Length: 375
Length: 59
Image (cartoon, rainbow over all chains, first blue to last red; front, side, top):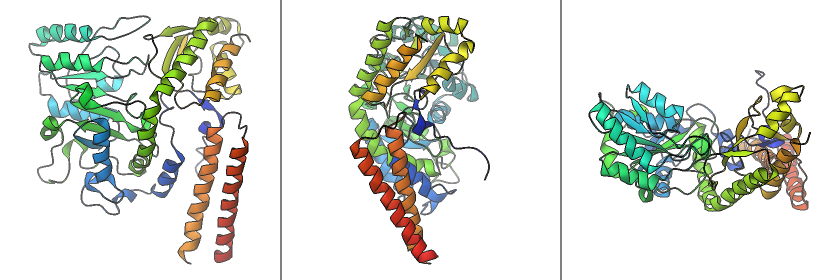
């Protein structure tokens, strides 16, 4: 056996890495992955295309997901970034440009770059709130239209950004974009699967979802691209020579155990988004305790409405100056107390997530953060 | 060999995954409640039973 080691992270530690907390799998999913992990196992009963497969029930799953997201059709992709690439590739033409928020993820930028489409980013409110408002979008549409001689071909909105956990006012921004003839792609990597999101209510044209980030999916990378009916002919178009194969996903995308993982996670997802208010309360409680204790400052908007919390931590930074382990003292100290997920070496600021913690674990986390200030 | 040993292998692994879930649920202190202990004992019994069936059939 190759010595890749046993991870055991999720069994031994409270993991607060925002990238991983909502991708943690359920037991059902790990069992399914175990059973379906052989190469192309999901293709046992292939009818020529992954999206029409009934055993395992991929076809019906995609239909249920469309309804769950309030969209008209859904494609499986290898991740949110591949979903964004597919939309940009389908919608944009040479000479077009894209509008994105100032907190956009790098994968939005590289998806555009791979399509040779320039991106204009909105301003943000800057330190410490880093919010992006509808006004920022309207200003950038006007500015970019003057610069490029045409309105943006697409607006890519980061529903919840991965640095501050800020939530965009998607409804107002979508309305402003549509009034100017600009279709909207919502990057939901940090929202769908964690919190209730309905594409029709928000008025978006496309939604890119990350299953391995927020839909408790393991066994590989998986994403979803949900589409409104009026755009299906452009994005869900099929190969000329292989008419059952969708072009934008090169025929079939997630053709491994990850799609079975996603299917088995889905009933848990449907249930857990109903408890989003608890997750928000947990995040607000943790933040309040830290702010009240002193030595912590929030980065991002107040009130906190998402489990991803970014903080500046002058209290830890002062300790790091004197500590023999310097900036590494914090991650080492946390690990010794059963908590991981903070990037080693960081003491000036960091982000963490309270997603999925029970009351006891949350209390332990908060007490530990506060206690470490006194070492 | 019949399917029995194969299905019991899956059954044992699935029970071990359920045990893994207990460690995940109670991390990092693993202070098990009475309910947790009862669940754990049931799962250990299921693994043992599956192992016995495999031993009885395959060896």
